[in-house]
Image (cartoon, rainbow, N blue to C red; front, top):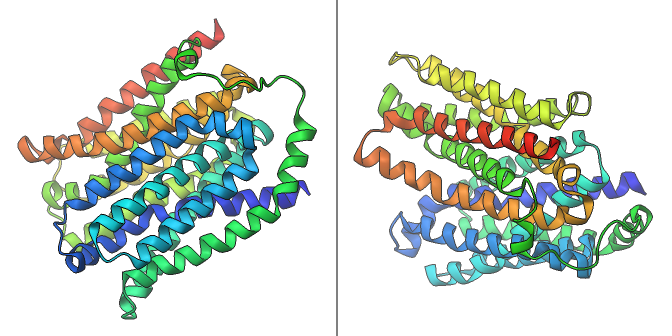
Length: 387
């Protein structure tokens, strides 16, 4: 039963990743058909991110009241309904309306599942589960590409993802007894039934440093992925098609890195894995900073940055119950998710402004700035919880 539930959780993480890369894959066609500017993708993304921030903060209250299994099942249903809504949308306004349940569902799944795995499974499973999230984000562009190349259109691409999400929703509802048995078997009285308020959570020793650690990491990760192709074209004189292809190696580095991290993370521990990831990212950024216009050092550097980034997110999440107690972990992980979305939503566009008005050559320095912040606040967290 435990193995079956774990398999279902792996499927849920694939589901979590499926919608995340669809908009970027389809938007070049979508904005033309809907007769809206290319930049409107940012507006839609902000609406989705707003929903994820709200549901992440509310995840503690929801999970305590309804349980992780039901919250996950309903959240996947919300994303399935949103994907179906996208598939029948014929205006940008409709996309914005369906973006609300999409964001609310995605944030609730993320916070609830991450806390459940942190409480009930070893660190290696956290790494592998986030690797499976990467599998989901890798599959969906191929599905959308197939729909577009076959002449079926982006509506069909979203429809296919919706069907997959609906099927997973059915599986999750049938699996609810497994979740309830596991939670009942692991309950040892340490968890309070009273939700932890946001103002009380941030007063807990070490919470502010871990939030700033997470914010800095997600700002770095998102900026690195969004702007690498533009950096290769503008600063390293690489052809756009080639840059797009090699830019995807960054995401491959994260996915592969999380797969291999799972084999060593239990032995080394979360703290060591975060430090190791930071050192590897520093090496990758150093390669980007080499004073050469050649593209090879930058290509190698961005892959190394991806490999270094791989263990940080899963290990920060997995260490939360250890640092702050099982009774507080759901609330704090929810706030961490909200902080992550803030960093990944607002910091990449900020770099876009810097690149436009100053120079895109600032790209590695921008990444280095957030890496240093991450290291500083991560080490501050270690000192606070050790004391």
